[in-house]
Image 1 (cartoon, rainbow, N blue to C red):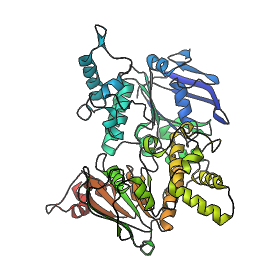
Image 2: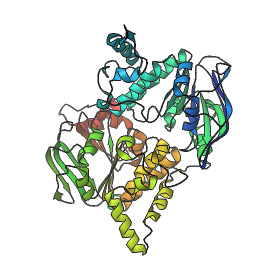
Image 3: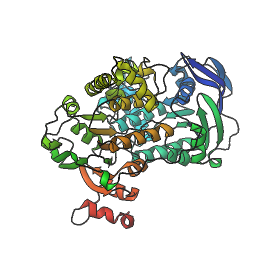
Image 4: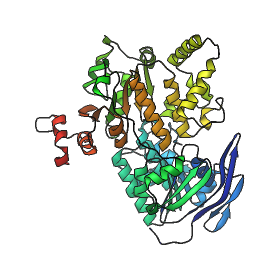
Length: 520
């Protein structure tokens, strides 16, 4: 870390109010060059609002921004970018129909004789992709819509670095990245701070915060709680300051053998373009965790089960009855729910109110009607406030359009939609992505309660501690296949051994996993 006393960026007494919400209240902070400064807090604490003010997306109601010793007001994100402040938002800001090169240099394309110089554009794109370690992974010429979520995140990072930035703001940059991709990002961040850049890092992953950050600032309910060197605090202390109380445990208890019931869903030799010979059972009362590196087929497995990219061969049966799940409607009618990884594109209707989003699925409506009949009231919307309170959505009103909620609160809306349903089978793909530590514990409890109520649960996660802490059984994927299956309590080394495709001499992955402690 560079030994520089003067901040490159400072905010003094920043206040920002939205209708019904005081998002920031007299917040001050200093960001030094050559260091990673983590900003943490619950969803709705004001982190993203502060970052949007720094990036020129919002103008504060009061307070001052000091950048490179001068008082500045940014009226547009381009002003902040041109000054030297770039931001990578939690939600992507890319044009899906444009190429990677067109997205990175949008509005700044190199020209020759009044026309876009495509050769130079491609060369400059390759240079910036090389900076993020993606030059062999992502082509400048491919359309963004063809990329995975992790690859799109890397394009966002490359786009930010294409500006001559002095400050780089990262709002949950690792939320969609697998372990090896996080390592690439970590090396890149270390390289950038060695060059004197200031990095502002927002993350709910405390392992990364404590590994990467030099300084930490904690926000709660729009107010500054504390700023301290990372060496002077512990995760437990930070959590207490964030949520105002101690969290006794991160994960609920696992299922007991007698609590696991009949097979609810069985896949035999399932195949499609991306999945090969899938054999899997989900049982009532059980949470099956699915681990694997990005591109291993985890999300594709859930999408095939839910009919978004159906199996083209093999047999899928629910409660002993063979069913061809060719569409999500068929899956919903079979009492299956899917909390998607990409909430923005697949999980929410951003321009619709929160209450409409929660009541959108057919099963949720049927559940509501039954509850109306049971309670003897026609007040159908009463279900929505109950669910909003249950998942702790931070919103001034249930009529608020979902697009104006934070990313974490949007994820809670997706969860509430399926919690309203009468599903017997739940598929959760990254259910706590972008969720703060307190809400994450609540969501873990909800998922366990679904299993305890007799549902079969499949949960995909990139966070190995979450997989280990929540799973009654762990399925590991590699190259579109189930590489192996592990019991509850298995360690990270065993999981990663299977996730990288290792097998023993007889080709058996499970046997190889048993020797992982000595082989890895």
